[in-house]
Image 1 (cartoon, rainbow, N blue to C red):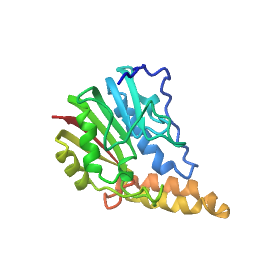
Image 2: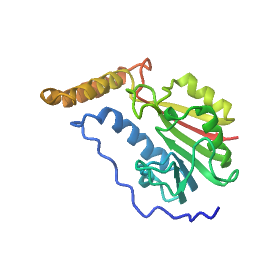
Image 3: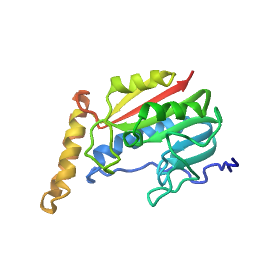
Image 4: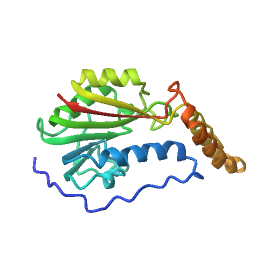
Length: 222
């Protein structure tokens, strides 16, 4: 399959998830972590379930090519049409594979992670994010939520090593974000959202992993 690899022409500008916005507690830790991790990638990168490629602009100057793969439809603009469970690429043809908030929507996340690892070169990076706590969305294609132990097991099953699993938004952020989603549905209550955001961020250092908004997993192919 002929694929044209194009360097990213758009410089990354830090995302500002305003503390006044209802999705602040969800977006701010996620985008901060990805801005740091994606800048470290190099070579050819495949984005599995790319959607409209909101994270492409975060890739650093070491990335020489980017290919977004997704199903055809109004919610995606892929470079290559394909399915996460059967990627249309040869083995070991990318230096890194990434996927953002996708594995909760697949029937078999273990198989899809193995498939993403298959197309990455030995020693290459596999990076993905998944939700720990979030309301049902994209129903009926919403199948999973994840924990630290579950992600560690997924990485091991895919023979990914040197894995690091990071919680993005602990107990207070999770509770605050769920409250904000409900407050945002009621015009008379939206004025409380900034205060919920400030309170949750202030309590953040005391948060436990009993509830986690999102997880970031980064590992290497054996």
